Amino acid sequence: MNKQESSYRWVVFGTVIFAYFLIVSQRTAPGLITDQLMRDFEVSASTIGLMSSIQFLAYAGLQIPIGLLSDRYGPNRFLIIGTLLTGIGSVSYSFAPNEFVLIFSRLLVGVGDSAIFVNLVLILSQWFKAGEFVKLIGMISMFAGLGSLTATVPYSAWISFAGWRVPFLSIGIILMVTSYLIYMVLVSKPKKMIKADFEEKKRPKQERESVWKILRRIATTRQAWATFLCHFGLVGTYIGFVGSWAVPYGIHVFDLSRSGASALVMYGLFGAMMGGPLIGWLTSRLGSIKKIYTLIHLIVVLSWIGLFLSGVKPPFVLVIVLLFIIGFGNGASSLTFSVVRGSFPMKEVGTVTGFANMGGFLSAVLLPIVFGNVLDLFPQNALHAGYHYGYLIPILFSLMGLAGVLLIKEEKKEAKVLSAS
Image 1 (cartoon, rainbow, N blue to C red):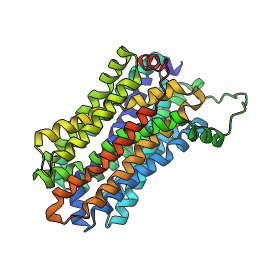
Image 2 (image 1 turned 120 degrees about the horizontal axis):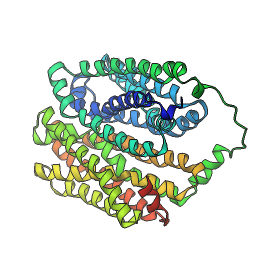
Image 3 (image 1 turned 135 degrees about the horizontal axis):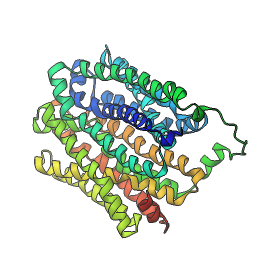
Image 4 (image 1 turned 180 degrees about the vertical axis):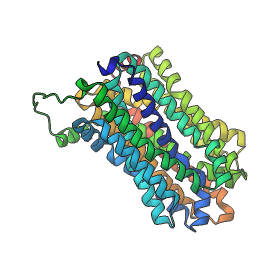
C-alpha cells in the first residue's frame, strides 16, 4: 500500500501537528513571566532580553543547516530529535536555579524548535498528495496560531494558579513523551505496515553545485536581500516584542494582571491568524504582490509610530487596535516566500527561504536585547517611560522592512504562484 493512499497518513498528520502545536506554544510562553524572572532571580531587563534572544538566535542560525541535513538523511529523525530537545529544554527551564540555566534551557528549546517546521513540511509532502498538501499548509498556520493563543490567557491562568515552574515542567514532559510517539508513528509502525515505502532505493548520483557557491550568489542578489529585510522588519519586530515585552508592558504601564496583560498578546495573534489568508486572497485577486506587501509594511510602520506618538500611557483601546494591526501585518509575512518562489529557480528556493527566514528571527533576536537595554536606562518607578522610548526600536526595524519591500523586483509570475499556493 502506498503511503499517500493509506488512511494511516491522518495518524501521521495528527501526531506531527500536535507536536508542532505544543512547540509553538513554548516560543512565546516565557514572555508571560518576564517580570517574575526578573524578581525571582534578581536579573536586569537586558539579561531577560538575552535569554529570549538566544532561543531565536539558535533557531535562525540552524535553518539552512537543518534543511541540508534533512534532505540528506530524511526528516523523521530530525523531527524526533527536535521535539525531544524542546522537551528537555522546557524541563530544564522549570528546574533552573539561576539565570545561566535559564539561558541554556532556552538555547536547547531554540535548537529543538529549529528542526520542527522544515521537517514537518517534508514529512507531510511524503505522506500526502499535492492537492491535499496545499490544503494542509493552511491548517498548519491555523494550528500555529492556536498554539500561540494557548500561550496567552490559558497559560497565564495556569501560571497564576500553579506558579510558573509547573506549566513548563508539564509541557516539557509531554513533549518528551510525544517524541517517542512520533518515533512509533513515523518509524516503527510504518516499517511493519508499509514496508515497500521504507525500502532504500538507489538513486543515480548527480553533480550538485557547491553549497558555498550558492550562498555566495544569494548573498550578492538584490532580491534575496529584499526578502531578508522584509522578514526582518515585519516578523522580527512582532515576535521580538510579543514574545518578550508585551506582557510586562501591560503590567507596568496599565497596571493589568498577568491574565489581562496576556490578552494584549492575544489581540496580536488574532490579527496574525486573520492576516495570512485574507492578504493571500486579496493579492491573488489584484495580481500584484509588491503593491499589497508595500501597503502592509507601511501600515505596520505607521502603527509602531502611532504607539510611540500616543505618549507614555496611551489609551488602552488604541494599544489593542495597533497591536492587532501589527499582528495582521505579521500574518501577511507569507508574501515574503511567495516572492522567493517567484524569483528563484527551484534548486535555490529552499536556501533563499532559509536566508529570508533568518532575517525575521535575527530581528527577533536583536529587538528584545536592545529593548531591554533601553528599559535598563530607567528606574523601576519610571518603566512606563522606558517602554515609550523603547518603541523607537521596532520603528527603526520596521522601516528596514519597508526599505526591503521597495527593493523587490516584482516578477509577473509571482501572483500566479501565490494563487496556486
